[in-house]
Length: 460
Image (cartoon, rainbow, N blue to C red; front, side, top):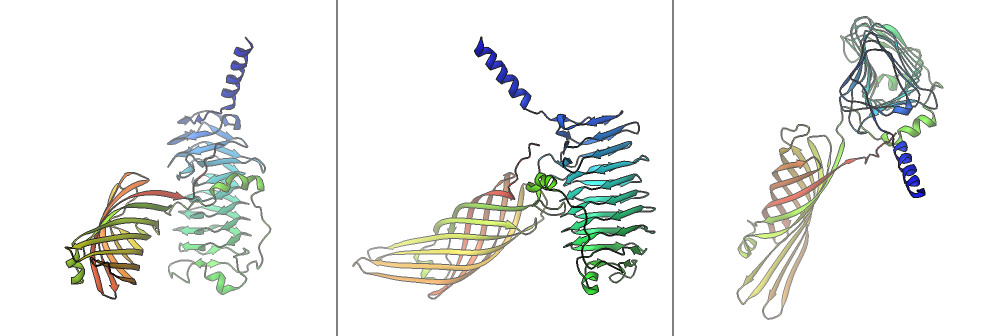
C-alpha cells in the first residue's frame, strides 16, 4: 500500500512539475489575461485581439512566436512587466523571426518592461507607449500612417531598425533611448511632415544613426551621437548632404558625453544571454560545413606523368563557411595518388597532397533550395612526392613543395537541411620543378552543416 501511495505521489508530482504549453487562441473577443503560471503561450499564425477585447500580459509571462506569427491588435494590448520580472517575447525555436505585435486600432496600447527578441512592434495609425523595453536582434519598432508613439527609455541592441517611420501624420516622441550596434538606428521614409522630437538619446556603433529619405527636415538636437566632433557625427547621418531631395537632420547642438539612461537590469540580461549572438532579420545565419569523400585524378601533363598512369585515386576533405547565402569560402585537403608498374624495370608511385583555400559561389541561389549548382576557384600549396623503385633495389625520390591553383564546377544536393552530397569536377595546375602538372579532378563528398552559434533551448 505504501509503495502504491509513493508511486502515485511521484507520478502526481512529476505531472505537476511539467509545465505544458498554452496555445494562444486564434481570436480574442473579450478581455483576457496571460499569466506566468500558464506560460509559455504559443502564437502560431495570427492571434487577433478584436475591437471589443483587451489582452493583458502579466510580469514574468513568456510568449513564444512561431515563424512569421503575430498578435494583431484591433482592440488594446497591455504588455506590462516589471524591472525584475519582464514579459518575454521570443521565437518558438530560438531562431526564427516573427512579425510580433501589430497594432491597428484607435485604442491606446502599452508595451513596457518587455524583452522582445527577433520580432517587431508595428503601429498602423494606433497610439502606443513603448517604454523601458529591451529590444534586440529584431526588426525594431515600425510606425506607419497616423501612428502616435511614445518611445522612451528603451534599449535597442543589434536590430535592423531601431525605429522605422513611413507615411503621413506620424506623431512621435523618441527620447532617452539607447541605440547600440544596430544597422539603421532611426530611419525616415516618405514622411512629408515630421511632427515629433528625437531628444536625449545615446547612439553607439550603429551603421547609420539617422537616415532621412523624406523631404522634411528632422529635429534631432540634444542627442549623444557617439562622437564629440562634427565630421565624425556627420559620417553616420544620411540626409540632404548625401541626397539633394532629402531634408536635413538638424543635430546641433549635441551632447559631447553620453546621457545616463535606462539600461536593462541584470535580471533582463540574464534572460537573454543565449540570444546575444543571433543575427538580424536581413542577415543569413553563419553556416559551417565539414565534409569528406573520394576523388580521382587524370594527369594530362607533363608527358612523363601521363605516360606513367592515366588515372589515380585519393581522398578529399573540406571545410566551408558562408560569407553570404550565395558565397562561401573554404579550406580543402586532397591526398591523390597514382602508381604504375613498368614490367620488370621499376615501380612508380606519386602522391599529390593539396591544401587549397577556395572561393565558392552558388548559381541562382535561393534560401532553402535542395539542389543547386556552384562554381569554385582555389589556390594553395601542394606537396608532390614521386618515387621510382627499380628492380635492382635502388630508388630515386623527388619531393617538392609547389604552388597549385584550380577551378571547377559542381552540383550540391540537400536531402535534408543539414546534410548534402557534392559532385564536382575541377581542373588543377601544380607548378612542379619536373614540369607543370595539369590534371582534372572528380570528387564526391558528403557534407554536414552546422549553424552557429549553437543555440540552447530555452524552457522558460
